[in-house]
Image (cartoon, rainbow, N blue to C red):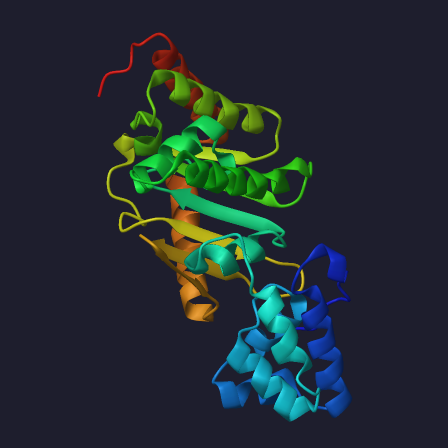
Length: 280
């Protein structure tokens, strides 16, 4: 059973609902497993709701109100909590990311969103939405940069990123944009804010050739993995799936260049972009 600590409602939009759900459930003497069973969700999932790492959807809220005699409290409030500045397919992942203690990620084709510069993110969003107005693109970029501010904390979350060499070599926006983007990544690594590894082309076949990986860990809830594709994404808490993704990330960490060699490669590629010496 996952028993979360008391959360500060002002620090997380879902913290108030999570705390109230735990108090209401315990007042009724119902276990997490028993509360989740009619919804076909695990006790761990209920624990994640109580810990504020998962979003409460309306169908769940209505069930909680009925079983826990809370007079519509959860249904009323989950509608407000559901409002998000992120796309629907990514909102829950972004909210979980904001309270994670550790994020481990393999990025196959792009510099991860948490590490992108304004210029790089602008080029990415413009490629995704070639007919959008500049105002729309600017708003998307600002949300991405705001999300990256979780790295302003000097220690939490631990961010361990494995970037495929393909992401370094794809000239998003041209040489100047890539020079800035790679030096930004290198700066975070040199400041010991992130652990950065590069998976070189020379590594050959590897465990995550089918796509990206992202694993999030929490103090008071089980880990989650996030899988995504174009305009789609899912948070998964199935222990077998999480264990498989954890193994894949461990294999990638063992296969990738060590952090010091990775940093040297990133800075070398940045220098090549700066002086126009990069060749496909």
